[in-house]
Image 1 (cartoon, helix red, strand yellow):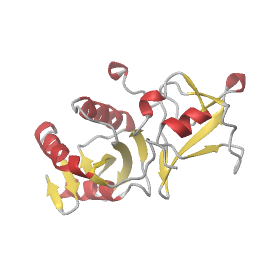
Image 2 (cartoon, rainbow, N blue to C red):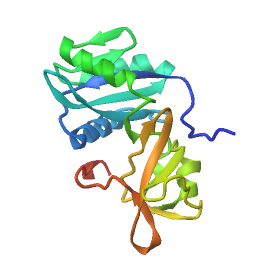
Image 3 (cartoon, helix red, strand yellow):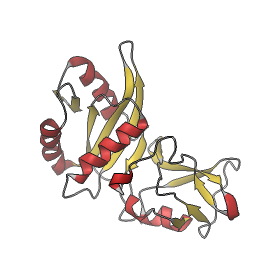
Length: 201
């Protein structure tokens, strides 16, 4: 049976190139954009590193339930700075080079992408259990470094540090964990070097 936070469902994906250079900047932008929305349930917001002949940086993809895409598109056009590239299916906005990288971002999930916002992420504060990760969020699979193919017990505890960034891998939202002090597990990506965003806590 599919949980309420499962990653399945029909969503429209908007690619965004707002000129963010680092993961920290992209994380901050995602939080800022979502704070302005009344409804964020069901949204997947991911970062994507890119490099072209002309430029490199971090783009965003915002996957939203189909009916919300038009509203979000107009919100992005209104609030993002001039020079931002947007792409949604055949619709585009902004300069050609930024639109090109926005198209790449829109096409990336669920094959790839680092998820910053996703259903259930609000539950991932402090220490949680593996069962919490899998049952209360859209995270579907766990990988423990050093123990390939071994799934941790559902009662194992995970020290989130309020910073849990799973990745899309072949259509499955996957979180990589590492052993931590005291017999706990922790996400592989730590808040440093991409701390985000004390003012969004």
